[in-house]
Amino acid sequence: MCLNLRINMYSLNCKGRLLSWTDPIVMGILNLTPDSFYAGSRIHSGEMLISQAEKMLQDGAAILDLGGFSSRPGASEISVDEELERVVPAIQLLARRFPDVCISVDSYRYPVAKAALEAGACIINDIGAGDQELMAELAAENQVPYICMHMRGNPGNMQELTQYGDIGLDLLDYFIQRKAYYIRLGIKDLILDPGFGFAKTIEQNFRLLKQMKGLDILGLPLLVGLSRKAMIYKTLGIKPEEALNGTTVLHTLALEQGAQILRVHDVKEAVETIRLWTS
Image (cartoon, rainbow, N blue to C red; front, side, top):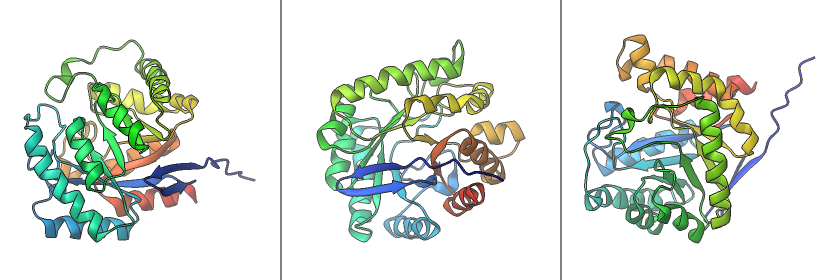
């Protein structure tokens, strides 16, 4: 007889809207950048934003994640004003069209995150993991969920900062320290993201994926962003547009290693992966 022991319950208080789950959930990526590494994810108009968001929600996304600053390796720097111009109107549009949806802002800049919360976002997705302390303080003050991602440096130089002892243990130590800091600040809902592709080589990404289960000791939901990334398409010698099959394989491995939120470009396929994995 096979016993299903995956009975953990997770919940996030998203500005009074309670998002609860036992089976893993999906976060849909909406890129407001013209230079995202995967061209198929780029949003070019308000009409396209609504259409993409509506499809993701119909396909089963629990969270929509909006970003206006490409974080791919070597991405060009843009001004805070330009990021605000991309992100704030888009969040306002989605919040009006889908008032019950949990919207996450993908940024590591305090002015952008603050304006996004005022516009209707209810989750901060910080790839800087609180390097700017005001970001974490903002989440604590507004009592919104905070996604802490592991990264070194910034998108322009992070691939020069890939020296680790044991990457699994190094990330565990890092998150233990960050968790203690966030608890002191008063953050109630904390999500951890190992940061696949950020200050990590392809080999390190795969090693981390195999060791990710060790982060369970922290008792926090794990978010993984593996969708169509370089560790897939460079390993297979293909393009991001051809990396959906590889993404599904790695999502399955991530679920086995304790992932609770899959951050994806392709919601339908990720939801189906979770459904099969939990059956």
